[in-house]
Length: 288
Ligand code: NAP
Image (tube, rainbow, N blue to C red; front, side, top):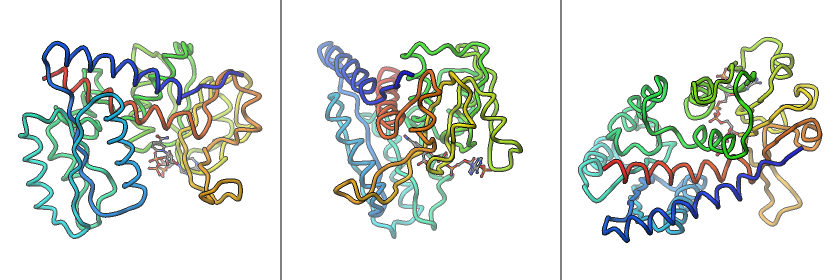
């Protein structure tokens, strides 16, 4: 069994990005610039945005934080998005989700210029991804595919089962895994899937993205399978200072001995999601 180390892979990619930024700046070009829009004070969102700003610093990007209180109106937010779209210094921006219930997330996503949509959530980017055109691919699927490539995992003709069909993980990942560059035969499983155990056990590559800690047990995994664990659920723990730890969707201790490759949680998909936003921002800057 080989552990897929997302943390060190993400670090290596950050170093590659930092080197590219140095070259761009050395050629007299401007530093890539990412902005994050944060509404309210949700603890998770605050943490994610803080990481994004820190990641930018580490690779030499310029970053900006645009903050609003929970009571911002949809109209105010749409006006700000129009201004960010028009800001010629800005290469890309993200609006951290979730938003308060009085704001339509879909309306906000669709207001972002697809050329600056480095989260890859705009329907234009999703549509381009589906038909294999250059696009911004959302961070988690992008990071997973990058991990698979960097570990030279054989995908052609392999059965890939993805458990979960969300718009940010399972669905776009199913599209990427079936594309000609990857050539897997893809099954997307979800909460209505019958015989899930047998479906999972048929997978050469099993990707768990459902959000239930340790849901994937050893009898659901084929001997020699590649297992990618996307799940991150905060559970109480007496072993950490914070009183919490992150758990994946896979029962790692029992499943790992059966696998050819497996990602840990934490340290697998998570760091790759973070670095993918940087890759998209670099691409946005180079596109302009
Ligand atoms: P989501 O929007 O809640 O979607 C969960 C999916 O799992 C749904 O499609 C659901 O099916 C399916 N599902 C739920 N229970 C199931 C069951 N018992 N059997 C089979 N399928 C089931 O979740 P998400 O946003 O995709 O996130 C999934 C997990 O990944 C979460 O733990 C999240 O925190 C984590 N995540 C991690 C990263 C990272 O960077 N590491 C990034 C994004 C998400 P239905 O469609 O039928 O409801």
